[in-house]
Image (cartoon, rainbow, N blue to C red):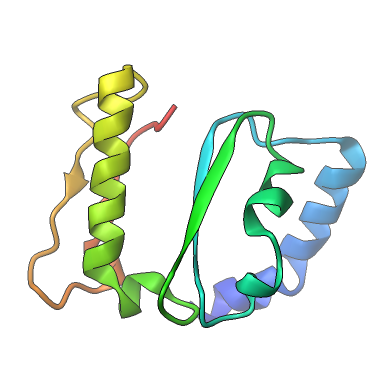
Length: 119
């Protein structure tokens, strides 16, 4: 986890700046979630993501801090399950790409997993 934060402040940031200079864009639809008690509410998160995505971006805040999987795992799982159901109905994801249920009521982020393509 700490390496991810270090990379986000160094090499990832450099790569993202290069991608923007080159005009690289994310090619799939996207749904973003963020904690409303963190820094993200100061920005229009959907607008920020839309600037680098080719297709539609949707999103919503969750009443928690920075790390949703640890603070609101049940809410996150419900949202992912609803999104997968919508994608299945639209034919955008394979039924073989299951959302795994957490092993306990006190799920950790590593127990909430989504596998497979979403678009």
